[in-house]
Length: 206
Figure 1 (cartoon, rainbow, N blue to C red):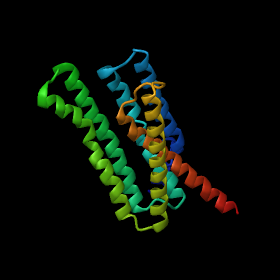
Figure 2: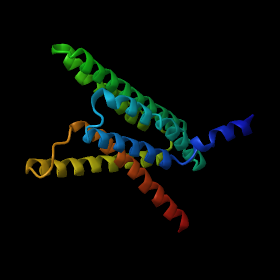
Figure 3: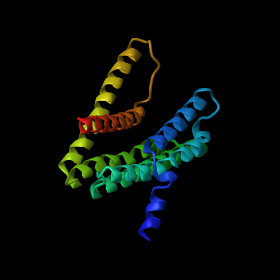
Figure 4: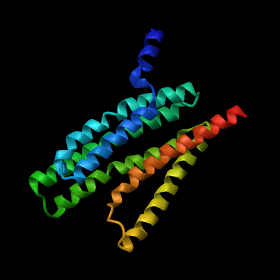
């Protein structure tokens, strides 16, 4: 039985988290490009966004396997990965509901305010997940590693937001919606984790 479980857990879908992350990023970029060209937009984009979100399942599984192989999959890390997956699915669901209601019911007043806020509601769970990991993680190095990666993501948001804000103020760049803050932070988090992993490998060779 253990051999069978190991085989299932380390199959194709349970390996190469970078591959699944790249597939998800490329899918989202393709959707954004299609929206820019007018091929998609509004509710028409939702099935494609939902399909791209499916990449998060093998991504989470592969990340767990990679961390387990490195001896870094603590119970707190496993819970963190699962909660991040729940947050991502909740965000897509709330976004889909909000856009569907807007496009088909054309709400006004309080209902319009409600659906405009709805996609932001999962952010409460997202922030709680980050804070809860710091509380639950008993391994000091793993906590330091995750915190450092999160700070790198924050640095990218601050730099990109400030730079683009001034470019937009001086009229040399188009307006970018503020909800792009979270995707930019997530990219920075991934880069931070890659930087930490690279540093660990260099330290292991010395």
